[in-house]
Image (cartoon, rainbow, N blue to C red; front, top):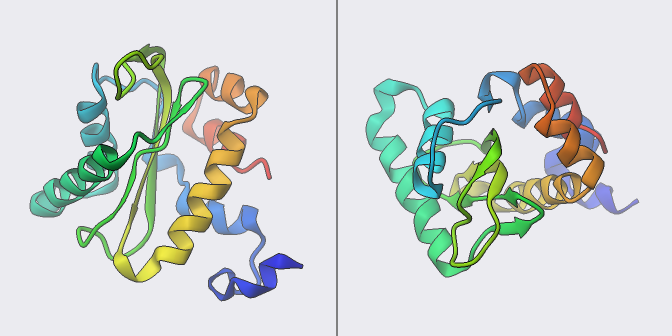
Length: 164
């Protein structure tokens, strides 16, 4: 099986591994932000404790710089902003849902209704790539997107994100 080459999974299934990263406390069912940058800020604030303000700013800067390289808008109302950053020492993610949408990060792009932000330290690039691959595949399924938009609790949203 192809997963045997991923030693960071340490015998875990993809679902179990995702469950360690996607946690209910980092899921916002009604994102307040009205633009892409503030949505990223809101999600980073959910991940990083308030006393780590300099790390929050570093993470935001790194995610926005990554976004300048190429948009992380996947289409279908989904964006997957992410970045390699020294602002965190472990791979982390937060999910924001805004059914009415926020403007897409680029000109003419449709609105973003589901945003999954991922932060990763430079030492965990393989984990980061694997996480973004899995998350994108989950979010590109229409049933998963629709169910996320109608999730009532963060736990329910998490269960949807663990559909592998």
